[in-house]
Image (cartoon, rainbow, N blue to C red; front, side, top):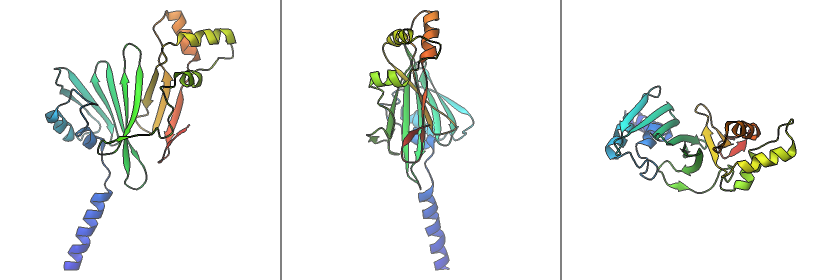
Length: 215
């Protein structure tokens, strides 16, 4: 009997250790610098939110509304306010190890994103895991633009100069582990904006369990 109970307890501890963290649990401990409008009580409210097919709206400390849209156990889209978004993705690193990838996007005046990595306990992780350095604007402009066959080279170079400042928009595929990068389109006339859009291309990276690779 004692031996049986020992085996049951051991299996329970093992299964608990093997259980992976969900996105709602990491949201309930999100640092203030990432979600400055969500206080402790609201975080506890988030932690109790388990319906992955629904969304949650909470009053933030600025008397505005923060919307949390949980798409799956490992992904959430958080609308901090009308101009700021957080995409939070849990990435598996084999067995039970996980890291948090956060994409913070500011939507005004031009869409711009920042990608950072954290441990499950929200300790900052340095390193890019294979993703490009978006602060290298010259490289970003080169890699995220392409000349259409019907466009003259001189016109292509002129249009590239219109993309100033160079701001990179990054978005997660909610149902997968793919990050897509593209350039923000600056404010300009409608005709010129359409021409600029024609030279902008996307570049996607897929998580392989250790790093992101071009896909």
